[in-house]
Length: 434
Image (cartoon, rainbow, N blue to C red):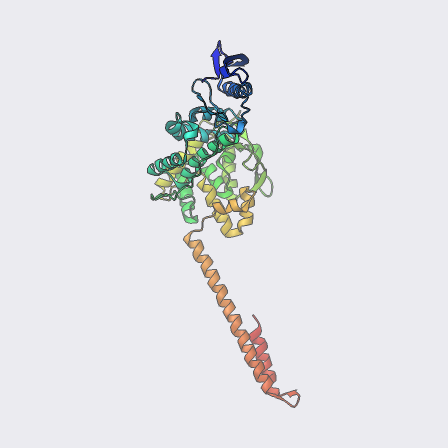
């Protein structure tokens, strides 16, 4: 039984109900004055259900509706006097979700990511499935598909988690009774993760290769290696943000450049000032001198080869992969340079300073960037062993002192200490010194 109909691009309420007084079938027709759209159809369905229950004296609360669906594919089933079920497929609900503030308030990057999840996995598998028919088996099938495609565990968690978020949103808006309970299993396939950082030796090899063979990209690479800037932060730098003339050269980080060319604030919405390594200062001075006669309308530090627009993120990612392969070092993404910087700073100056330089508001986030290599672990183990050796030496000295004191007590005669015991006291004093 349809509750609404479309006429001349306008939505009308149109349904029959049983009059409680006369027990006869009556027809109810009414214009909603709403133009035809998915969002308006959902609103009209809600209004129709309310009036249907009022006229039939069912008084059905909204929480008992399993979902809401527009009239072209909705089916109202009055299974009994206390429930009315309106079914909606997943494809229609996804469109509804994308029209809501929960999706629109996301960042551009997050929206692009969700669009990929939706168009690649959600719609191809579940677009025509009824929303109420999604159960734990559907989530398991999605996970198994991703495992068969050898996706990383994190990628699997993100996609299945996004689908569960959609279902929870349907429950929140009372379009679904409950979200199926499902726990992700541990993938059995062997996933080979890409190295996220380079050791100091590997870093120097990569820098030398980029300087000799990819010289146009060397400045932004060396800046990222020694400052840990995010890719968008490095691309957004202008010469007004760089101070090379003061006693302590620095760079001001307060914005980021998205892939679509728009500026936004930094990830944690905080500004930070970073000191520059002497090697970075010399490179930036050379870039400034080379750009001065060629750039008139652009103030960006890192420009493409035509000196017109900022360097492309995709270009930098391809350059990094190419350079790592040809330099015979582990292949990392451009963001891996930030992990390399974080690991180096933690090893030398500790986690607190690294967190400030990276612009993290929580030290736990910085710990995700730290990767201890074999050389660092060996040095830490050696320091621990030397520390234990020092403690053992102190314990031996204490034992010697105790033995000497016992002898002094034995040499105590008539309330006085004999002359030989004075020599023993001096020995004890020397041994007790660290």
